[in-house]
Structure formats: structure tokens, C-alpha cells
Amino acid sequence: MSKLAIAEAMIAAYNAQDADLYVTYMTEEASEANYRGAVVREGKEGTRSGLKAAFARWPENRAEIVSREETDNYVVLREHVTRGPATDGSDLVAPFDVLAVYSFEGDKCSRVEFIR
Image (spheres, rainbow, N blue to C red):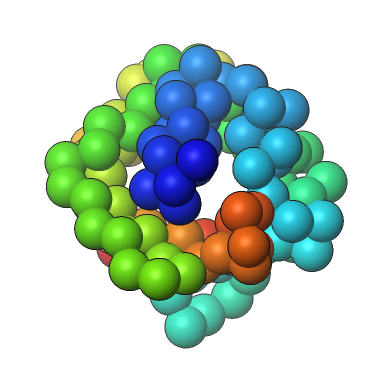
């Protein structure tokens, strides 16, 4: 499976709101972070629990892949994200675009950084 196919499978799991499947594509120490900034979800288990919380808050959350690029150990996806109404009654989040940089160690994703 190519690194691009793995990143696309991660998005498919994300859109199915299947955090358990999503993290199967990651290393144990994987993280999700803001680009050159703070880690948002630390480790495989932190990513799993963070995604489950996000999916509970935004049950209509989806990411559409707008464009994709693959080089050696990186995949860059431009994603269009829509959240839908939040279950906690908070304000609606306007749809947004994000560049997601997926870094790989072998055939597992070791880090995802978001440029928004």
C-alpha cells in the first residue's frame, strides 16, 4: 500500500468516524499537531481518544480531499472540512480548508501536521 493510499484510508476512517481504524495506520508514538506548533493529540491512544471526543461533538464532521501529493516519506493533502452542528450547542464552525502533512516511518504514519 502506498503512503498516499494509507493517508487516503486514514481520511476514509475519519469520515466514517472510526477512530479505532484511523489509528491502525499510525505508529505507537504518532501525534497530530499544528504546523510547527503545539501537539494536539499525543500518541496513538491520545489520537484515538481525541478523535472519539471530536466525533461525539460533531457527528456530521467530514473531510473532503481536494488535492494530494506524495514524496518519499510525506503525503500532503488539501482537505475541505465541514463540521455541522455541535452536540454541545456551541456555535457552528464555518467550513475550512487545511493542508495536512502526513509524515511516515516505513508503512505507518508517525505525525500529521495541520496548516490552517
